[in-house]
Length: 131
Image 1 (cartoon, rainbow, N blue to C red):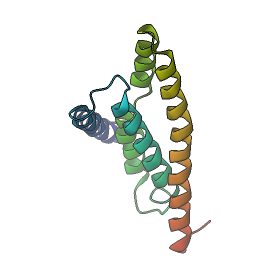
Image 2 (cartoon, rainbow, N blue to C red):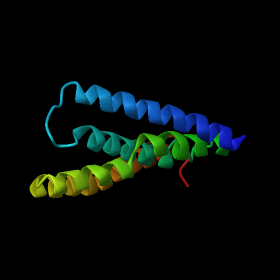
Image 3 (spheres, rainbow, N blue to C red):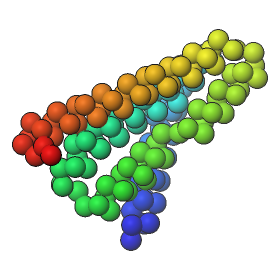
């Protein structure tokens, strides 16, 4: 049954990524892959928060935790698209933009994860269920 949960959550995550990406493309016309960057940053933040608050709070079954973390967020965020977009920027001669994209993705991605993790831990402790 776990595979079904992960598959369904993965399908929802992929649909959400497509919807968010398409929505961003309606107002962003530039060459810089803003949609993928924002999707990956938000996914990093949410996974950080969920990991330290909701998943550890015991409010969800282990199957749902796996479905949400691996299925939904795993398919919502996308390293492969980030990689291809970086190669496309390099192939088009946009070296500076490619370096900016990689740097922002790495630095802001780690910061987003840390911030979500920190906020989740803070809330977890505030609710009196700290380890």
